[in-house]
Length: 152
Ligand code: HEC
Image 1 (cartoon, helix red, strand yellow):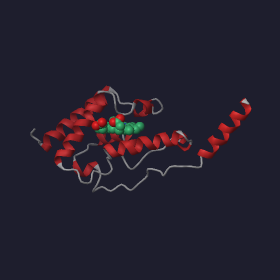
Image 2 (cartoon, rainbow, N blue to C red):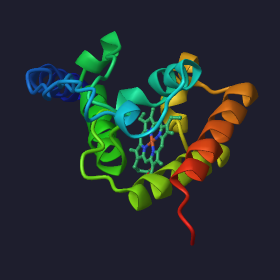
Image 3 (tube, rainbow, N blue to C red):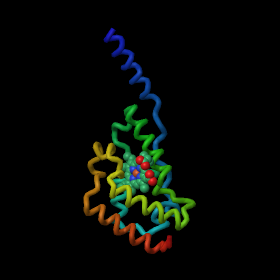
Image 4 (cartoon, rainbow, N blue to C red):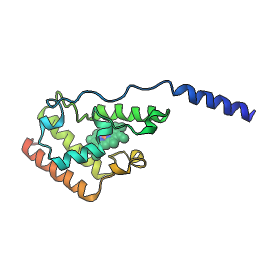
């Protein structure tokens, strides 16, 4: 009986490997990405790329285990949800108001430790942000928000 269950699970596991999600490796257009909308210094670009781009851009850097389902599905789900919130590769349609609001949210999420997603940091230790990086990000956001000058 136990052997039968094990074999069934094994067959299922192998079968789901054939259902691969489409890779998030879309085009990058400089007239759509965040650098077109706000000034992004190199150090901030590094932070965003290392800590946020896997789920919030068109350029996911896939680890080998992303090929293994159901991990691959789980990752893909995060990417879809993340991009729906903000896609740094494509801010098409963002007006100043929306930009300002998203910048504000970025700081809130990072300061509260909600972003980068803690479940992801467990495997992606390189995406973890140290205090200095958090401070850099906050300073940058404040500066860009000041430039946008939205009076509430
Ligand atoms: C492993 C994937 C992943 C990474 C890495 C990641 N995010 Fe997210 N992010 C998500 C998902 C999924 C959501 C939507 C669900 C949620 O809010 O938890 C989200 C939501 C957000 C939101 C909207 C929050 C809200 O509820 O209004 C912001 C802002 C955000 N992320 C910023 C960032 C920033 C900045 C980084 C890098 C420092 C980052 N994220 C890294 C997956 C990720």
